[in-house]
Amino acid sequence: MSAASLGALTRAYPRVGAFLATFPVPRPDEIGLDAWLDGLGEETLADLGMTRPQILDHVRRLQQEDRQAGPEPVRAVTILGGRDKLGRAEAVELTIRAGEIVCIVGPTGSGKSRLLADIECLAQGDTPTGRRILINDAPPPPGSRFAPERKLVAQLSQTMNFVVDLTVAEFVAMHASCRQVADADAVAERVIATANALTGETFAPTVSVTQLSGGQTRALMIADAALLSASPVVLIDEIENAGVDRRRALDLLVAEDKIVLISTHDPLLALRGGRRLVIRHGGIAEIITTSAAERANLLALERVDAGLMDIRERLRRGERIDDALEPWK
Amino acid sequence: MARPRLVTVAGSPSVGKTSVILRVLDLLAAEGQKVGVAKFDSLSTEDDAAYARRGIPVSVGLSGGLCPDHFFVTNIEACLEWGQRQGLDLLVSESAGLCNRCSPHIEGVLAVCVVDALAGIHTPKKIGPMLRLADLVVITKGDIVSQAEREVYAYNVRLANPRAPVVFCNGITGQGATEVAFHLRAAEDTGGLEGRRLRFSMPSAVCPYCVGETAIGETHHRGNVKTMRFEDQR
Ligand SMILES: Nc1nc2c(ncn2[C@@H]2O[C@H](COP(=O)(O)OP(=O)(O)O)[C@@H](O)[C@H]2O)c(=O)[nH]1
Ligand SMILES: [Mg+2]
Ligand SMILES: [Zn+2]
Ligand SMILES: [Zn+2]
Image (cartoon, rainbow over all chains, first blue to last red; front, side, top):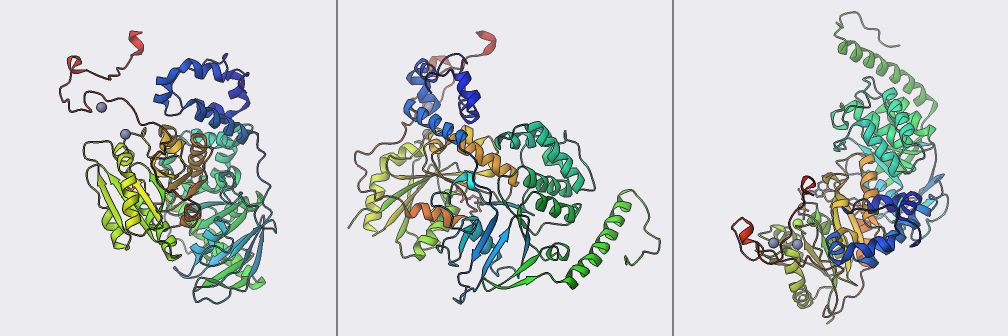
């Protein structure tokens, strides 16, 4: 390591390059890491806030991370029941596979968040519910549980917003480069095009992320979660319906082999899932498989929704809505 | 009676330290652990009331004109003795680094750094030893920012500290507190602190203004003074 020039080192190990770039001192490409540190001197090192051995250890760990292959893809998540708030056994063994949508229903305070938190932290009988989570039909290897590259769940909810001061193109490209994808700009372009296909009001890559409307924001979040997020599980918490094509959004996540969990009482989302979990008193009380009759009802509801979307679009264009409306049959 | 185990929790003001500590200590107290807090601040604090409301014993140290982190090092041993007199199993220190350069973390004592996702994706690059040399990094306020920003933020935290596990914890709902508690349970026995070392030296510079100078101008610059260089004057 010490023999290689800084230029070669930072090209081979992008994380090392990104870390060293945070030091506000000149970093000539030709010299080696040791020679560079020698040249900095004690006072500069003190200013940088790290000792020489600490910097070397840091670089070694980042190299390791750059070398590491990604974690094994997650094909299935299994929830082994624990007990509910009344201490009754939760007789559940539920496996959710990649590309599947499962909805979670139940009143506020019934324990939906706890279930999602159990999945997120890969509970092993050590949370208040006593549930256990299996990944690919086996307990997660010890050590992988809190590893940052293993963040299992990507979360989308009403309260989340973009706060960064960047344009859409800049930000998505930045996310892509953190994910170390091969062609960050091309992937960013694809994310933005996909987001635009999900929303009625398209947006340009040059607009600032904080300036997007509610619908555009959700659309970009969903496209990014589907195409760029490392997390195999996507959790959607009560997302508002305004301005996003929910059906396409879910199709996209499924096509990317995500495990989709939706906490919702929106019939268009709830009936789109293959199954829904009914949460009561902190436990999974029932698992309902969406029936053929429910699927037929979903089609009727989708027509109603399309009708509403259409009226919204006409209002946007400044039209009058005084014609006799079809009952969207 | 043995000394309580010590965990240092550090982070800029208002990142959510108190909120997270309350959530985590609730979990540990429910397991029967006797927990307490040593709170350090510069001018004043209301955190002691928040801890007291939950029945958590708390001692407060106000550093006044000193950097709270320097004040921390001078007084942490006495806080640990206080914790022992209270019969604590676990003492958590809460301190706010004000300069992003000092850090209260001690060798062999579990060191937690709390950072705030709302502070912006570049923030992890700007925090010194407090973040870089921590054993556990807790990211708060993830409930307000996008998943994409959380991922970029966590990546930047990882660049700043490739040793520590990174946990997202919501200080308001407590989501993630189970994971933080998991790491706190593993804190080693601290024993006495006498002879232990800080993980990184605090800034050694004492400039004239540190020792009470108020007048501006070069004639007043005595002692350890650092001046800026400008591109156009090279
Ligand atoms: N939205 C949100 N707010 C938080 C979170 N954690 C803390 N806060 C709020 O941030 C503010 C500062 O929190 P506090 O714990 O006092 O910060 P401290 O100064 O670091 O101890 C309070 O208003 C908290 O309610 C979080 O995860 N999400
Ligand atoms: Mg506080
Ligand atoms: Zn300081
Ligand atoms: Zn000074």
